[in-house]
Image (cartoon, rainbow, N blue to C red; front, side, top):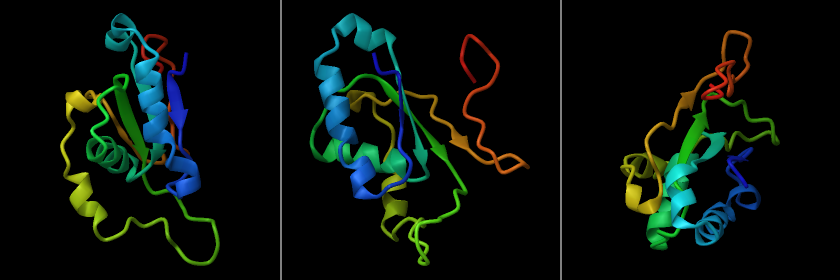
Length: 130
């Protein structure tokens, strides 16, 4: 059972398969599990808008319930040009509202680094893992 997915950055070789994976997981999950199990997806800022747009543009409604937690202020360390910034049109995609028909439920967080520069994804609460 996959309950958490981690995307390191938004290059195609790291995120293009996410929507397909979500559809595959939804198709292989019975309705009772689909209602009671949430997939948590962690990744950089922009992932939430990317997944919303990908699922809607392809009319992909056979996905498990999911939330996207975005990590903000990630330094770009892949070459000399900073392509970590979102493209200009991404601001329009970020305004795309959450819609349960496409699997997304409430609860996704924007996670910023703490004063030590660490993103704390999980806490000590055993009930929530937060």
